[in-house]
Image (cartoon, rainbow, N blue to C red; front, side, top):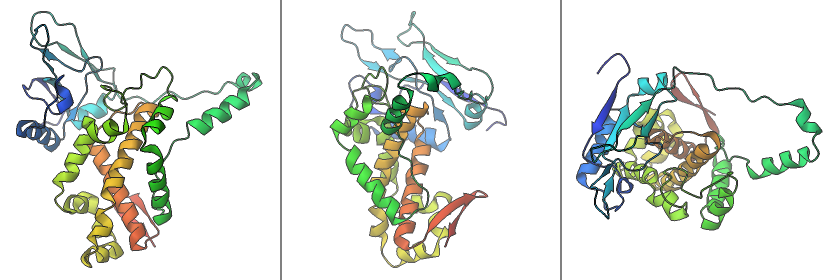
Length: 303
């Protein structure tokens, strides 16, 4: 549309997710269409940092909704990676004003500096060992085939319990035990993997893929490997399709950890790309390939 960064600001008079209202309902065609337009234009919906809703009907028992948004294009996000949306106090209107803070140009994250005298403190080694054992991050090992896929499934079974989520929540200092992705309600298995609007967006995108077509199109993943193509052509789509649900579940968990431990932002397209990559890698294991590497904007397999 333009060669320079741009954004769209305003009262769109429609919500995207059930959680955008204090009385959530079902996703309507208007909501789905609005989300589809945002995704189709490649816009980034920046969440309001300090307030969940931007509109109120001002009644004694109010109806609240997030009708106002600031949508950025990718160039704006790249040039101003620290920008945030802040809700200001309401003055006259039934909408709150929104302030977009810039924070300057792209920057290099500050380095972590180790102080030599730390190791002289009594109990230092025990603290390090304890922190390492508790906060070891679970990372996807690229292209390790079925062995890695089975390990992921074992980890998924371990995290998909409310008690496990509660234990991990204690890792966070001053934790409010709220959902790490949306921050609106307490974090439970049902909410994190099913009810949170970020999870619903991912599942909605999976539902839009009426077959494996969208996974097939993404980065030419399936076409990149003859063995996997043979699997699909031989009518073994079910062996691949059954990987989609665990891949999406694993993606939600990894995204949740990135938010907690790395301060990352949540973007639906990033979650979709991660889920598709996991399906592809695990399917490569089923097809008998050894692994994959990324390079030059495409995907190549190592035999």
